[in-house]
Length: 279
Image 1 (cartoon, rainbow, N blue to C red):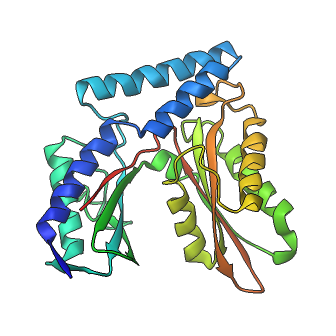
Image 2 (tube, one colour):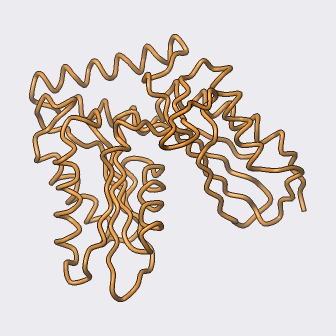
């Protein structure tokens, strides 16, 4: 049994909050450049050039990629052979508080959905925990802006709607979102489980590296078809048209009830941010 002090979690979360908001993951950066090089429509290509220039400047000047530094979604994978000395959830929130205040990141969290009083330090975070093998803790911080989050949707489809119903729903969600979520987007799709599990699957799907298909060939084909269908919508970067509406689609699945086919779509803007550490 390995003991990890909760303070180490705070420090890792603090660093990840700052890093995620200042630098795009390498796979997202590479996808933007790839689509920029392939984009034939001049206004769309120019929009992609400006997006690339923005994240390059953010990295060079240690500034946030976007003014919306998001709500902190924190994923903890805790090894079964780890003993955490202290409260891990309090430690996560302490790390978020330090990262957002010390890193001069915008505080966007309100403590009550209706009262709307800002917490002042972007806490509380959204925390998701999994127990895994081993004696390490993997921490992933994924700041989620709400221009894209607000365009996410879930549908409790009927089983008979099947694959065609899933495709139609996902494409319709992106089409209805239009330019609002700052395309090119990344789309996470959750299939199965229950109402709540499908939404979590869709959010977790956004963490998968772009270009890495689902291990199941059936769902890899679905991801490819969805990407093709979405890019055929012609919304384009920032709504300027062209072939680059979406950088990637990731589908995650779980067992479900005989009477249901839950389908969730979690949309992320081109600043698909996440960072983390293994401690």
